[in-house]
Length: 142
Image 1 (cartoon, rainbow, N blue to C red):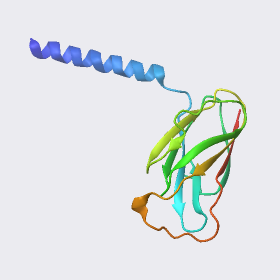
Image 2 (cartoon, helix red, strand yellow):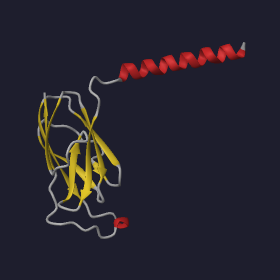
Image 3 (cartoon, rainbow, N blue to C red):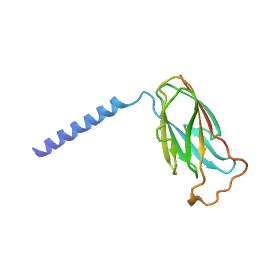
Image 4 (cartoon, rainbow, N blue to C red):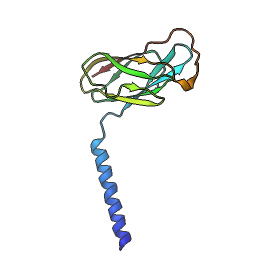
């Protein structure tokens, strides 16, 4: 008898959990922008596992979330340069694999950059060739 009761409770809990996730699921899956270290130019970023570049221009639908992941050897602060006003929550990505996310509730053209900090002490003296890239991202939201 106890076993049946436990199975019913487990099934009910599973059903409630599935309903919560189904109800909160966005119509737009989050997309990832990854920042990485490289020898030439120091750092670049990539959208949705595409090519790594210093400047990116991407298109997304309204209500899409971008998740920024810092896999560089230095911290980066995400900065909105122009576009419809938005609040960046925790824009400081100050450790390896640090993340922040942005959701675009309005259409328009948004421009971002990062302010890079100094290399993490544990990384020693990472060699780079040439000047450091200035990361630029243009997001067109329709």
